[in-house]
Length: 182
Image 1: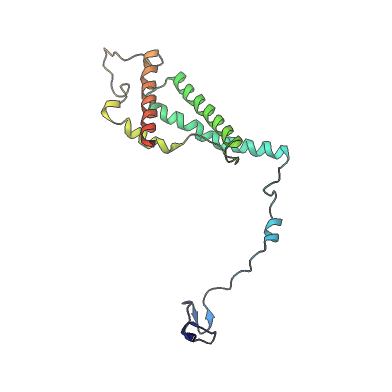
Image 2: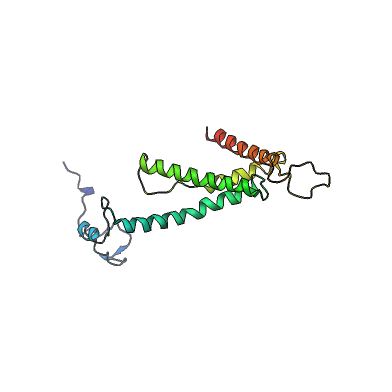
């Protein structure tokens, strides 16, 4: 014996679609879907196509210039606000060159052994807020900020003593992130 309670016909007065009223739809008619063949014809390059080398160089330069800003700005922001470099141009240049070197190395490894997508591995701003929070603690306040007394015993900016101060802070950030990731 079949249960006819669940069988519906078009003549059924009860509609399951709330937009339908008196057999008409209140929404505009749907656009006809494009076929796969039509959408493929709109692509310039398909997945396995390789553009000419001139286009590859131009697109690579565009990709590099987009990543350049982020890789350059992060060390400059971090140098004074987090690592207490205070105008140490040698230290800031070391941070910038290290950022670009590691970005290039990780991009090369990603595109060679990784998922082989044309992406750039660059500096991330996501660690900036926790680092600023960590160094806002009284223990890690930058001694070069504020008014310095006349008989100041702090090392000269750019000296080996100053270098040890910001490298100690850099090691502390590295240990902090290693700790929170495990």
